[in-house]
Image (cartoon, rainbow, N blue to C red; front, side):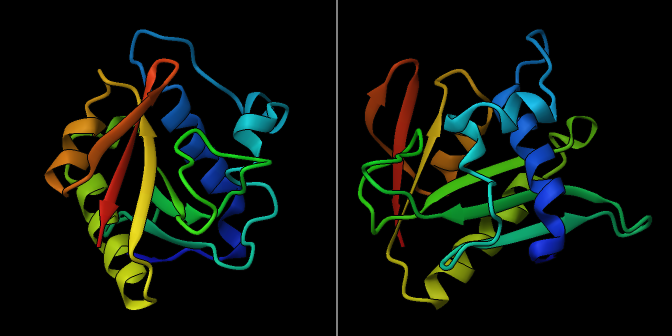
Amino acid sequence: MRAADASDASFLTEMLIEAAFWRADGPLGAVDDILHDPELAHYVAGWPRVGDRGVVAEDADTGASVGAAWLRYFTADDPGYGFVESDIPELAMGTVRHRRGQGIGGCLLQVLIESARSTAISTLSLSVEPDNNARRLYERFGFATVGQTGGSLTMLLSI
């Protein structure tokens, strides 16, 4: 695990694709799908902005990046899918498809939560579809559902 920096912007976009197009039997996304959709692009555009925090998981043998989790603040004028308040950062994360189910997401989440806690961030939000396996991971870490928008749940974690 290592902190995400400006050189990770492209990889975060790839992980956003994995998060947005997570269904094994669903459509696959592409960078253009993300960058031309303002509701998705704002999760990675201009990475990093002031207040952004992130972590990247790397394969110990190859050094290849295999997952990422990051926090970003949004406003009521430009909310994320899991937006609650402008002072609560929203979590986004993804793992490369062939490495899912290997504990990478849990490690990413743990490190990012610890990082947030160390900077006095007290609450995190996220959005997840009810049938996404990641929902169980978030619940194990203490995220609780506080609402539903469209087909997605909004979850909060007090840290």
